[in-house]
Amino acid sequence: MNKLAIMFVTCISISSCVSVERPSNTTNYYEYNMTFEQACILKNYYQNQDENVPSSVQAVINDSESVCK
Picture 1 (cartoon, rainbow, N blue to C red):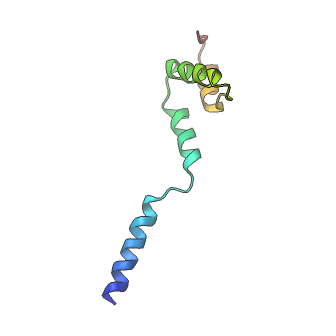
Picture 2: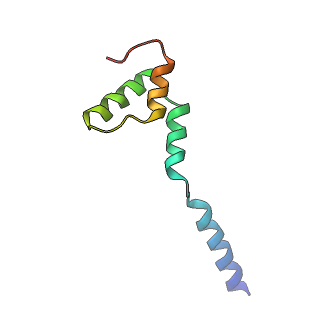
Picture 3: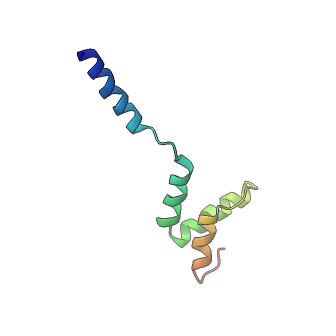
């Protein structure tokens, strides 16, 4: 019984460390914690890598009245 309890606690501990929704977590992070300057840097990076600019980055740029250089 003691070994079963230890295994149960171990499984719960491991499962609490695993995040299933990883991509949405990073999207939300960028959307709520990014300044205009950071958004411009990320936009330039994505454009230099020939990748699509994430919508959260573009939203920060669109919300400001300035233009990225």
